[in-house]
Image 1 (cartoon, rainbow, N blue to C red):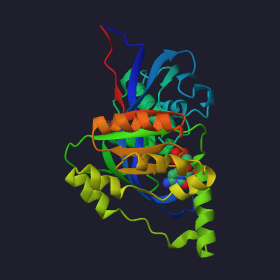
Image 2 (image 1 turned 90 degrees about the horizontal axis):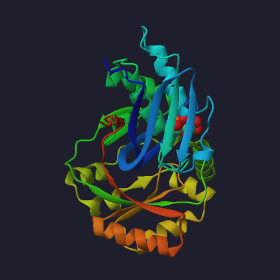
Image 3 (image 1 turned 180 degrees about the vertical axis):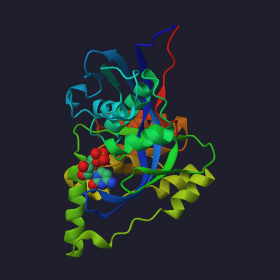
Image 4 (image 1 turned 120 degrees about the vertical axis):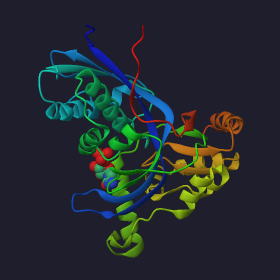
Amino acid sequence: MIIVTGVTARVPAKLNLQLAVGPPRADGYHHLVTVFHAVALFDEVTVEVAERDTVTVTGEGASTVPHDGDNLALRAVAALRKQVRGGNRAAGVRVSIAKRIPVAAGLAGGSADAAAALVAANELWTAGLTPQRLAEVAATIGSDVAFALLGGTAVGRGRGELLTPALAPATQYHWVLAFAEGQLSTPKVYAALDRLRAAESGAPPAQHHPDLDAALMTALRSGDAARLGRALSNDLQPAALSLYPALRKTLAAGLELGALGALVAGSGPTCVFLAASAERALELAVSLSGAGVCRSVARVTGPVPGAAVVPAQG
Ligand code: C5P
């Protein structure tokens, strides 16, 4: 009998093709309607049997990821452990996160790591939780964790955790991501949006009712990248720009260089550009790098599937 002592899962970053934000709820979260889209920029999370729970992080932005109980991957493992009965669950686990998704960049990297940890621990402990039950555990960890499990393109409601896969042809889109020098705190960006809206209307932001954008869904169904580029939208963008004004220059540069659409990723500060083809994405990435309007660039395709176990070698 083979005893498995470690499992690795790979998980994608997410973009929000639409992010419509409503008023804050009683629990402090905001009502959302969003269109999530998973892209081929992956973190890898390995979960191994150990004496007690620990986490190590390597790669992009590793030093800024919490290494204690605040780490979302560790919290995800602890939440799953409570759901697992019998002798399968280990006393502890060593969680090793290899990051390529930048931290606090609007790409849900922390949520992705939590989703990968859930998938890996579910396998390691032969816990057998169904995707539905894993998604329920995911939702207790963060608003974007359930989508990181699902992947593809999906409409998110509630605070983002209530998901419906989008029916769309198997079109592959070509994106360029422009990573910023700094980070943005998601709660601070939501708070800035509330302030901007209150200043505009002189009243609390109760009148904003987020709706799914029909033009965006039509664009996705048509598989027409130019149409999709025109339909991209993010209610958090003005708030992110108010906290990080230099992003205006990055967005403008990408559009000038021929991007079909541009927007801030989630709460930022990563900027996202849609290109017409792989070749145009390469040109855009090279030109954006040369323009000095970001720290670095990446070309990614989407949609891609959600968190999944990496088959063991040999
Ligand atoms: O759910 P998650 O922990 O990823 O959210 C991080 C923060 O983003 C929350 O603490 C909250 O300030 C903000 N947020 C929100 N409304 C949402 C999702 C996130 O206000 N729907």
